[in-house]
Amino acid sequence: MKHLLLDFGGPVLLTPFELAAKAEQTLGPISWRGPFDRSTDPEYVRWQTGEITERDYWVIRAAAYGLDTIGLMRHFYEPAGDYLVRPQMTDLITRHRAMGRTVGVLTNDMGAFHGPEWKQGISVIRQFDFIVDGSVTGFLKPDPRAFKTALDALGDPEPSEVVFVDDQLGNVRGAEAVGICAVHFDPTDLVAAFERIESALAP
Image (tube, rainbow, N blue to C red; front, side, top):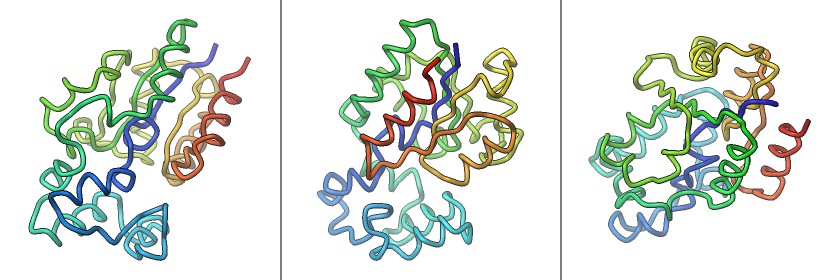
């Protein structure tokens, strides 16, 4: 039985782009739409092509409002609550834990984007067997050391016994480079994204 390793922001947590209407209530109009309309967001394209990092992208976006990254994320993600989580992913996690799978998280920026108290309001977090956060370990995906840290948390299985899900293709390729079975989670096509996860986890 394969282990399930999830990126948090994107596969589990809704992306900021999907929460734009909420943030607009306090930030005003948001014109950049990331993967949902790349023509509106040249900085997102730069991120996807590797010209800038994910952290660089959000620093740029936050600076436009005179904020730091955590300050910007508050407009999208506070108050904390389960309305911020994909119900389809909550169901998948619950079902696969009941089957006896280990379910962990490998994220780059949970601590960097959200304060420590915020996690208490997200109930799905309590279903994870562990969380490896690059903002704590210092190893950010797609660095092989990030994946090694997660494999250690899983009990050092064969990498091929792990299904890793991430919405960033660079991180998917990083997982594949160390032998992990990786699934790209496309938030613009949720049906196909969940079908790919289920197929990868199938015996």
